[in-house]
Image (cartoon, rainbow, N blue to C red; front, side, top):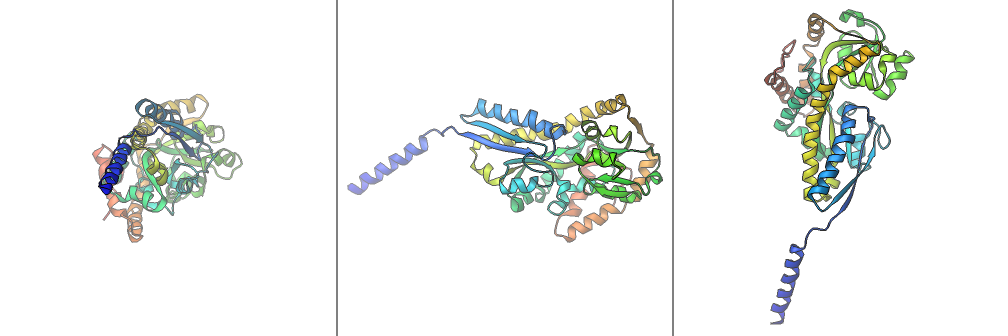
Length: 355
């Protein structure tokens, strides 16, 4: 009888514990990027992601989220953000995979297919289709770097800003031009001297002649006032590249209440789409801004793009084979990317052959 009473008492306690409402939590999350708020995606972290998560958690749960924000290198530098999220120094980080060529070589796959779509919206949709069909692309963050990829981030279309006028690929031969990561290969194939750099260094470096141009989207030129030191902005149409991401530390995410997790994922999905639509809306405005401040903006004929693309026609296959050899699904990803871009209406100047 005593044993039965004890069991009944334990059962009552258990039922009571289950039926207790979840306790409200005050949640602090550190969110950061090495890039400053003038960058479109960081601006969207600050003006959309943070306030929307805060608002929806307050409206739809008993919890409260407070973000501690650190942009422009205040918490992590551009090349240290993956490690910052991995170690838990920050909880959420936005960063370019271009600064992780050893850790995330395949995630720069759009750069390996030169002269892709110039639409950021198409770029991020194409990238999402590839990520959804190739689990490796998202799983590597969780399996190797203790973080969860919650959003992809697109830049707007890359072109070339220079301190000098140019009209043909031959005009670039021997010129010192900057870029990040695999973007440097484009310069190499044009006969230029590629220089690895980052946006915070760009103004001073061009001002002092360390290099004479940048593979850069117009927002980067406008926001960092690079037009003051590189007067010529030439539309060559390298493509809008989705090779940034927003990630959250896996351990921190697991400790969050389920309803807060769901809201973060929900808002991140909307944030991802906005990096496409906002960049596309801003692109022509930024070109107009450049013109208004005295920059010379021009678009080169398709024949120049075709010449440059043809010089790189074998490179995608080389990269696919290199990645396959390293144990990554390079061929699968590059083939899918070509096909998904075409489904979304893009016509490649050269149809790269991936075997």
